[in-house]
Image 1 (cartoon, protein in one colour):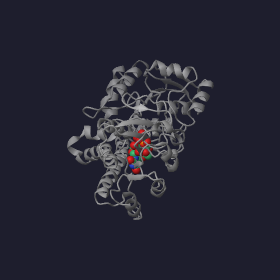
Image 2 (spheres, protein in one colour):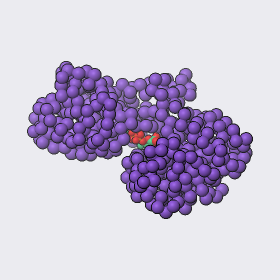
Image 3 (cartoon, helix red, strand yellow):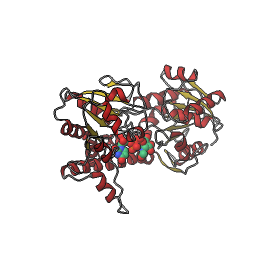
Image 4 (cartoon, helix red, strand yellow):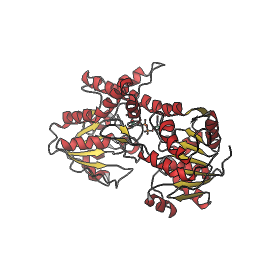
Length: 427
Ligand code: SAJ
């Protein structure tokens, strides 16, 4: 199938890079978002998200006339849905409202012969059970009159533009012809393999990948608690275990965040609770890790009532500015619940506004008057901090490292008592 014009619905971390990449590869693209402020920002040459290289890519695509943005779709050869699928915190069920409205927005513009691709991470069977019936309100039959496919994105924040092109891509069609149409579309720019399968398999693949990662981090986090209990250095034990040629234990930390790994496993639990006790348990282990970190801080500082703590890092992982579902934020809130006064510093987002957290603009401000300092994210600039300098700014000499980012000797030589996650009494 040949594509001259496509429409991408949802201009977030995935939709915008995808729309711009198609546009710079010779396809006319209409980018659609329901938020007027996003459309205005893009039209005036701005950008509402941070991703290396994205500004240049988007402005190039817009200036060439190949990428336009609007609040509503238009007629096109293909429609890609790349809207968020968060989950409702209360019952951990997927919030599919954005997918539903995007599919509904396509209905007036869907014509025979078109292709629709869902990219949003979704529970198994969403393409068939949720999206197809909405699109069939046109009177056209999915898989007969138009093509319908699911294709997950698998890009790493911070590397999106490169990975979008280079990663292998799975395209699941509701019919083999739909899979082929999806293949033809992504072939426009994807250099990695494009593998055709059916829609529900493609949905499962994405959820299985992220669930695999979540349960592997959960076991690392559980090892950190065991090591703490037995006064073993978990970091040393993991690196020794990983000498085994078929073992690759991931790293423990303050918990699992981001909008994917901490969310997607719930989509499987929701769709078959009786079949997923293990996946649920892993989620619960990771969700409880911030509490474990707080117990470590209590061991380090004693009662937290009235203690001043400098919290380093708010992002969900190293060297990104993304605070979504961040365990660092949760640790800080729990420290405050226990009576601590926390000043937080996030170098990648120094002006972040969080309802319950005092975010300061620089490291010195966070450290001044602090009784203790806690490292919550392994940002490169935190790992290379000069412990002697930190000691001259802080009030106390207690440091807590939740990511194995600091050198024990350097901090102890600077007069600090360093408490590390997953180490207990071990030195
Ligand atoms: N984490 C640990 N220990 C580890 C690895 C990660 O505690 O050993 C934590 C991180 O600090 C973070 C969370 O887990 O809080 C998730 O980090 P991540 O790097 O595993 O995942 P994301 O959410 O940044 O991006 C992932 C990517 N998956 C990877 O396997 C690296 C990407 O390929 C997916 O497309 C993306 O999720 C997604 O959209 O699902």
